Amino acid sequence: EVTTVEPDQLGEREAVVEFESNPMFMMAYHKPVFPHPDDAPFTILHELLSSGRSSLLVREFVQRRKIARGVYTSEGPSERFPTLFYVGASPVDGVTSAKLRDELQQAIDRVAEEGFREEDIAGAKRRLRVSFLSNLTSNYGMARLLARSELLWGDWKILLKFYDDLEKVTNEDIKRVLKEYITPSNRTFVEVVDKRSEGENKL
Image (tube, rainbow, N blue to C red; front, side, top):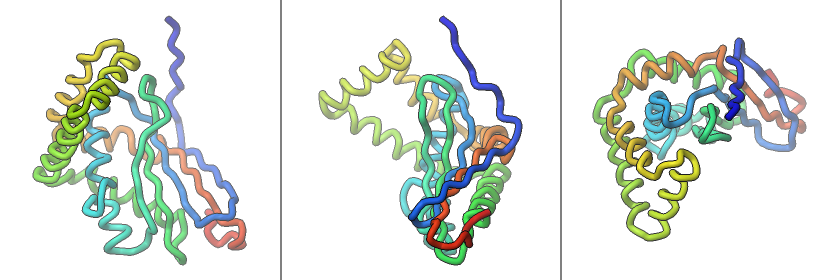
Protein backbone atom coordinates (compact mmCIF):
# COMPACT_ATOMS: atom_id res chain seq x y z
CA GLU A 1 0.00 0.00 0.00
CA VAL A 2 1.33 3.41 -1.00
CA THR A 3 0.37 6.35 1.21
CA THR A 4 0.80 9.89 -0.06
CA VAL A 5 1.39 12.45 2.67
CA GLU A 6 1.07 16.18 2.08
CA PRO A 7 4.33 18.04 2.83
CA ASP A 8 4.46 20.32 5.84
CA GLN A 9 3.13 23.81 5.24
CA LEU A 10 6.03 26.27 5.46
CA GLY A 11 4.11 29.52 5.80
CA GLU A 12 0.69 31.10 5.96
CA ARG A 13 -1.50 30.99 2.86
CA GLU A 14 -4.28 33.48 2.10
CA ALA A 15 -7.10 33.72 -0.42
CA VAL A 16 -9.94 36.18 -0.97
CA VAL A 17 -13.24 35.25 -2.62
CA GLU A 18 -15.72 37.93 -3.70
CA PHE A 19 -19.36 37.01 -3.26
CA GLU A 20 -22.69 38.68 -2.57
CA SER A 21 -22.73 37.68 1.07
CA ASN A 22 -22.00 38.94 4.54
CA PRO A 23 -18.23 38.93 5.12
CA MET A 24 -16.93 35.72 6.68
CA PHE A 25 -13.70 33.79 6.88
CA MET A 26 -12.17 30.49 7.81
CA MET A 27 -8.76 29.65 9.28
CA ALA A 28 -7.60 26.09 8.61
CA TYR A 29 -4.71 24.33 10.36
CA HIS A 30 -3.18 20.97 9.46
CA LYS A 31 -3.63 18.27 12.12
CA PRO A 32 -3.42 14.48 12.46
CA VAL A 33 -6.44 12.19 12.76
CA PHE A 34 -7.32 9.32 15.10
CA PRO A 35 -5.66 7.03 16.13
CA HIS A 36 -2.84 9.59 16.40
CA PRO A 37 -2.67 10.60 20.09
CA ASP A 38 -2.91 14.31 19.23
CA ASP A 39 -6.41 13.87 17.81
CA ALA A 40 -8.20 13.50 21.16
CA PRO A 41 -7.21 16.96 22.50
CA PHE A 42 -8.77 18.52 19.40
CA THR A 43 -12.09 16.80 20.15
CA ILE A 44 -12.05 18.38 23.60
CA LEU A 45 -11.06 21.71 22.04
CA HIS A 46 -14.11 21.72 19.76
CA GLU A 47 -16.33 21.30 22.78
CA LEU A 48 -14.63 24.04 24.80
CA LEU A 49 -14.06 26.60 22.04
CA SER A 50 -17.33 26.70 20.14
CA SER A 51 -19.92 24.16 21.27
CA GLY A 52 -22.84 26.10 22.72
CA ARG A 53 -23.41 29.59 24.10
CA SER A 54 -21.11 29.05 27.08
CA SER A 55 -18.11 28.01 24.95
CA LEU A 56 -15.08 30.30 25.03
CA LEU A 57 -15.16 31.84 21.55
CA VAL A 58 -18.94 32.21 21.34
CA ARG A 59 -19.13 33.77 24.79
CA GLU A 60 -16.21 36.14 24.19
CA PHE A 61 -16.74 37.30 20.61
CA VAL A 62 -20.47 36.90 20.00
CA GLN A 63 -22.03 37.55 23.38
CA ARG A 64 -19.65 39.76 25.38
CA ARG A 65 -17.71 41.83 22.83
CA LYS A 66 -20.29 41.52 20.04
CA ILE A 67 -17.72 41.74 17.23
CA ALA A 68 -18.77 38.49 15.52
CA ARG A 69 -22.12 37.31 14.21
CA GLY A 70 -21.01 33.75 14.78
CA VAL A 71 -17.94 31.63 15.53
CA TYR A 72 -17.47 27.91 15.01
CA THR A 73 -14.83 25.18 14.85
CA SER A 74 -14.89 22.06 12.71
CA GLU A 75 -12.69 19.45 11.02
CA GLY A 76 -12.42 18.00 7.55
CA PRO A 77 -12.31 16.72 4.96
CA SER A 78 -10.70 13.41 6.00
CA GLU A 79 -10.99 10.97 8.87
CA ARG A 80 -8.44 8.48 7.56
CA PHE A 81 -5.63 10.83 6.56
CA PRO A 82 -4.21 14.05 8.05
CA THR A 83 -6.90 16.69 7.94
CA LEU A 84 -7.69 20.30 8.88
CA PHE A 85 -8.93 21.98 12.05
CA TYR A 86 -11.15 24.93 11.13
CA VAL A 87 -11.96 28.13 12.97
CA GLY A 88 -14.59 30.17 11.15
CA ALA A 89 -16.34 33.45 11.92
CA SER A 90 -18.40 36.27 10.47
CA PRO A 91 -17.59 39.79 11.70
CA VAL A 92 -20.27 42.36 12.50
CA ASP A 93 -20.53 45.57 10.49
CA GLY A 94 -17.55 47.85 11.12
CA VAL A 95 -15.16 45.03 12.05
CA THR A 96 -12.82 43.67 9.38
CA SER A 97 -12.19 39.98 8.91
CA ALA A 98 -8.47 40.62 9.44
CA LYS A 99 -9.09 42.21 12.84
CA LEU A 100 -11.41 39.42 13.99
CA ARG A 101 -8.96 36.82 12.72
CA ASP A 102 -6.15 38.35 14.78
CA GLU A 103 -8.38 38.61 17.86
CA LEU A 104 -9.37 34.96 17.55
CA GLN A 105 -5.75 33.90 17.14
CA GLN A 106 -4.79 35.88 20.25
CA ALA A 107 -7.58 34.22 22.25
CA ILE A 108 -6.39 30.78 21.14
CA ASP A 109 -2.78 31.73 21.94
CA ARG A 110 -3.87 32.67 25.48
CA VAL A 111 -5.45 29.26 25.90
CA ALA A 112 -2.19 27.70 24.67
CA GLU A 113 -0.40 29.44 27.55
CA GLU A 114 -3.02 29.29 30.31
CA GLY A 115 -5.18 26.29 29.41
CA PHE A 116 -8.76 25.83 30.58
CA ARG A 117 -10.24 25.39 34.02
CA GLU A 118 -10.12 21.75 35.08
CA GLU A 119 -13.87 21.74 35.72
CA ASP A 120 -14.47 22.94 32.15
CA ILE A 121 -12.39 20.08 30.75
CA ALA A 122 -14.25 17.60 32.96
CA GLY A 123 -17.56 19.02 31.75
CA ALA A 124 -16.52 18.67 28.11
CA LYS A 125 -15.55 15.04 28.66
CA ARG A 126 -18.87 14.38 30.39
CA ARG A 127 -20.88 15.87 27.51
CA LEU A 128 -18.92 13.86 24.94
CA ARG A 129 -19.42 10.69 26.98
CA VAL A 130 -23.17 11.29 27.19
CA SER A 131 -23.30 11.91 23.44
CA PHE A 132 -21.46 8.66 22.78
CA LEU A 133 -23.68 6.62 25.08
CA SER A 134 -26.84 8.14 23.62
CA ASN A 135 -25.80 6.76 20.22
CA LEU A 136 -25.83 3.27 21.72
CA THR A 137 -29.46 3.43 22.85
CA SER A 138 -30.79 2.39 19.43
CA ASN A 139 -29.90 -0.43 17.09
CA TYR A 140 -29.37 2.10 14.30
CA GLY A 141 -27.01 4.24 16.35
CA MET A 142 -24.97 1.26 17.49
CA ALA A 143 -24.79 -0.22 13.99
CA ARG A 144 -23.70 3.12 12.54
CA LEU A 145 -20.86 3.52 15.05
CA LEU A 146 -19.64 -0.06 14.63
CA ALA A 147 -19.81 0.09 10.83
CA ARG A 148 -17.97 3.41 10.80
CA SER A 149 -15.17 1.96 12.93
CA GLU A 150 -14.83 -1.06 10.67
CA LEU A 151 -14.83 1.13 7.56
CA LEU A 152 -12.28 3.68 8.77
CA TRP A 153 -9.98 1.59 10.95
CA GLY A 154 -10.80 -2.05 10.22
CA ASP A 155 -11.73 -2.88 13.81
CA TRP A 156 -14.92 -1.98 15.69
CA LYS A 157 -13.10 -2.26 19.03
CA ILE A 158 -10.91 0.76 18.21
CA LEU A 159 -14.00 2.88 18.87
CA LEU A 160 -13.50 2.16 22.57
CA LYS A 161 -9.92 3.44 22.33
CA PHE A 162 -11.20 6.74 20.91
CA TYR A 163 -13.29 7.45 23.98
CA ASP A 164 -10.62 6.11 26.30
CA ASP A 165 -8.19 8.60 24.73
CA LEU A 166 -10.66 11.43 25.41
CA GLU A 167 -10.81 10.57 29.09
CA LYS A 168 -7.01 10.78 29.33
CA VAL A 169 -6.70 14.28 27.81
CA THR A 170 -5.11 16.81 30.18
CA ASN A 171 -4.73 20.57 30.18
CA GLU A 172 -1.10 20.09 29.19
CA ASP A 173 -2.16 18.02 26.17
CA ILE A 174 -4.48 20.80 25.03
CA LYS A 175 -1.84 23.49 25.44
CA ARG A 176 0.74 21.38 23.64
CA VAL A 177 -1.36 20.72 20.51
CA LEU A 178 -2.37 24.39 20.33
CA LYS A 179 1.26 25.47 20.40
CA GLU A 180 2.27 22.84 17.86
CA TYR A 181 -0.54 23.04 15.31
CA ILE A 182 -2.56 26.26 15.74
CA THR A 183 0.11 28.65 14.54
CA PRO A 184 0.18 31.32 11.79
CA SER A 185 2.77 29.36 9.78
CA ASN A 186 0.43 26.33 9.71
CA ARG A 187 -2.61 28.44 8.79
CA THR A 188 -4.57 28.92 5.58
CA PHE A 189 -6.83 31.98 5.76
CA VAL A 190 -9.74 32.24 3.32
CA GLU A 191 -11.94 35.34 3.38
CA VAL A 192 -15.29 35.87 1.71
CA VAL A 193 -15.69 39.56 0.81
CA ASP A 194 -19.06 41.10 -0.03
CA LYS A 195 -18.45 42.44 -3.52
CA ARG A 196 -21.31 44.92 -3.00
CA SER A 197 -19.37 46.70 -0.22
CA GLU A 198 -16.63 48.30 -2.37
CA GLY A 199 -13.91 46.37 -0.57
CA GLU A 200 -14.01 47.82 2.95
CA ASN A 201 -13.65 44.33 4.40
CA LYS A 202 -10.70 43.34 2.25
CA LEU A 203 -7.30 42.64 3.80
